[in-house]
Each structure stands twice: as structure tokens, then as C-alpha cells.
Length: 255
Figure 1 (cartoon, rainbow, N blue to C red):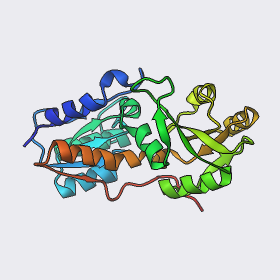
Figure 2 (figure 1 turned 60 degrees about the vertical axis):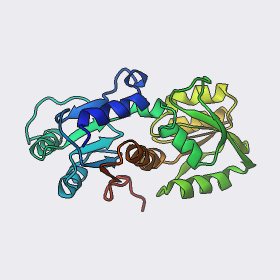
Figure 3 (figure 1 turned 135 degrees about the vertical axis):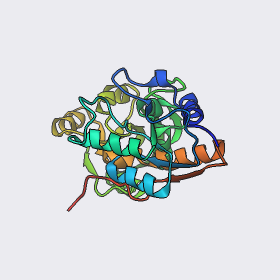
Figure 4 (figure 1 turned 180 degrees about the vertical axis):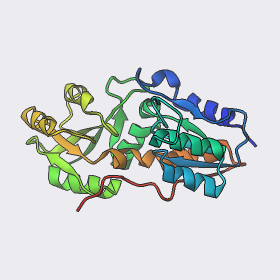
């Protein structure tokens, strides 16, 4: 059976650690590098519910998108983070996280998002082979029709949007929270930007700049990569069982 270290190294060969943002925390964040893996669970987040799912299934490793932790002041059961770490340690479950390096990676979060939305001629903002954010073209259409399509394709509970006064044709996407990249999308000639976690004043700003802004949610814009990640890991390690979490979903609900 492959070890945690072998799987970690294969993951980081795809989503290279030097592609992460400076503030980020990726790689092996919990567990023993030398432990053998027979079952691997993939999830967007490592919550206590996901940890229990992994333990009940008998998984030795969780591969997540969002980091297990950025920092922790203590390792006790008096904090949610400490309790989660102790639970993982007791059940000998390792965690490998691929965050902004997976956002940037070819075939990662943003390529998957662009493909899920049917975009063509996909490229990065700067034209390189990796980077956060993607640009592509869609069949020209009214914004409201594209918003309905985005909601359906991503299985979002709801979609917020602000019209920029233009039909949809050249689309930028940034999974999760990517509003910092709006200037790059505008500079690239995009009429529409799909991301998540948009603030009220950012909707106002985009409308003033003539850009259609669509907030499809943090979870819906990133979660599609988990199934792709499962497929990649099954292909690389056919001797182990790999599955996506069956219980983890969007924490944001709509009335």
C-alpha cells in the first residue's frame, strides 16, 4: 500500500507548493508521513463530521482543499480546532490539504469551474500555465439566462448577481473568494465575473465598472474539484479505495 508521504508528494507534484499564496498552509498538516493508506476520503473541508465519516469508513487519510488549520494556540479539546486535531490523532487519520496551490494548478479548482460552466478557449489571467482565476468564452446570452445556468450547473442553493449592463460572452471565474482579481478580469476584457463571497459594495463597484458580477457561493464554486481529485487519485493509486465525502455540503443555507 502507498504511504501518506507518497500520496502527499504526488498531490504536490500536481498542485505545486510554491504556487500557494504566501499566507496559506498546504501539504501534510496532520498525521504520520510513513503510515500506509488503504482508504482515502476527499472533502472540501475537514470538519468533525468529515473526520468521523473517515474514521467510521476506516480511512487513514483525508485529502482536503481547505487547510485543516492555519494556526492554533493550543492542542486541547477546549477549542473546536484542538478537539478536531485530537480526534484525528486518536484515530490515526492524516490530512493533506491543497488550497491556493490547487486553485492555481492546471486542471485544478479554476479549470474545473470553467469547464463546469461550459467555457471555451480557457486561459489564465496572465496567459501562463498556472495561476488563480480563468477566462473563457460562452455563447452570447442575456445575463439572467446565464445566472440560471450557473445555479443549475453548480447545484447552488442560491445565486446573487448585479447586472453590468452587458450580455454575457467573455467570462472570468475565480472559485471561492476571488474578488481581488476583478481588476485583472476587467483588464482582460471580460464582461462577466463568477466567484463567491462578494460584499455589497463590491456588487456596486462592478456595476459601475460595467461588469456583470455573479456570486455563486464559496462551496459551490470549489466543490466540483473534489470529484476530479478523486478521479486523479484513483488513477495514480488504483490499489486503494478513494471516495468523496458523502456527508459534507454547503454550510450556507437558503430559506
